Length: 245
Length: 314
Picture 1 (cartoon, rainbow over the protein chains, first blue to last red):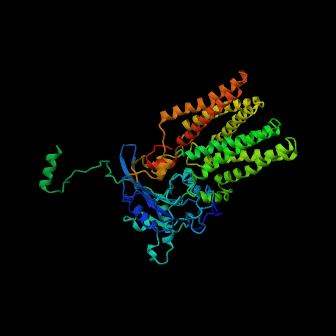
Picture 2: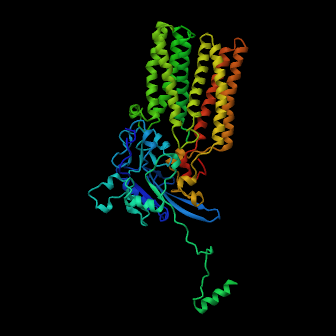
Picture 3: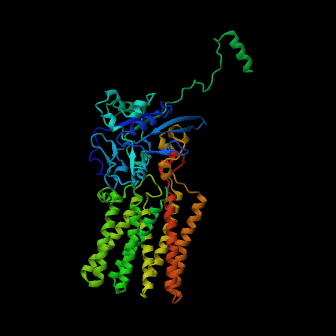
């Protein structure tokens, strides 16, 4: 059924991505590809994987942006993006067959590959580009929030998180219930002023992003300090004075 | 957006076919259609062939055409599903009308009811097609009232030109249909100009700054894409057309789609005996103009996802 759940799900599983911490290593994207190549939506087809123009389905991709402030000062922000499992998911309601659905129990948005006709309309309806069409299978695929991992009782409890969260070497990704204001992820979002992507599109995304922290400055605005301070040794002070002229 | 040939063929031919059905309904109920059986077969047959061609082209465009029947199930939420339902409902209603019109005559109550039902169903089918696009908020060029009204207007316009052609071919009085067509061509011309002004002068509420949520830090631009090769999203939604080509193609739409057909149809009034020839000329030019119009409708539409891949706006 492509109607959204009558009442918003009480449990809203999702990700919180810290743009201050992410170093853009792409480990989350690679780990996602690895897990999901054997998971719920397997395979994630690749075309020409070892050739000159490889292409294929990925659920998570890391973009890198440059942000330039009014003073012309630039910073790089690495930006992982996957499905945001929106409360008002337009990809679900446009589906003509009911293959696309949002789960009432935890809010995860999934595609039933057995009833998807491959019309691609859901990928047009998503403002974020979360859905990727599998030309080989003829059906739409998307992030499952590792639904086959997070509930897997065969795994140690600590491993029951999405593959991207397990893989992140810097701890930039957190997973939890964003429907519960007392959960760790909700408190993290509240304390760091987490935000929605494109709120003007009206999708009410569940996943949140945490902004980069302000730059540390020296107070007087000088971006650099002299190589050698006064407490440096005699030789270093002499070299510093020589090259400071 | 990527202009897929199948979708261009679908929306133009099924629109013309449904538009022709609406005119056959209106003219038939007014008693203005030739009572000949052969005319009925050719006119309704042409409308059904056009609608069917369009539907088949869109079905075979699917990843799984054999599952297409499933698309009829979600009419409560999906405009694509509603389009399928109204398209299939139009067949028996229009066929029933065609039969009752020939057998019972235009004044019979059953003919009137069937005709009215066929007109409503065909109109809803066209509006649903337009609403599929108008309901997609990430695409500013589509999510506006110009889109469903344009689909209906262009379907009525191409349908009217086909009716004028059919009546000229069968020696009927093609003057009323020709007059309606000229009026619709003028409305279509103005509508297209209004639409282009709208998409040129408005901007999306979404920017690279809102797409990343980093606007409070400054101006955002893509530094490095997630991968070296194009992916599905970039091919499907990152399609971009050079501005100078767009302007040249807009002129083709205006000249071939509206101006030449209007002049040709005016000639049908003035030059006696030129009827079939000039109406056929108008229909051919209008068809070319409509295909270019539909190609531009896709090619000029920008999707918000392109901003994650370096587009400065959507």
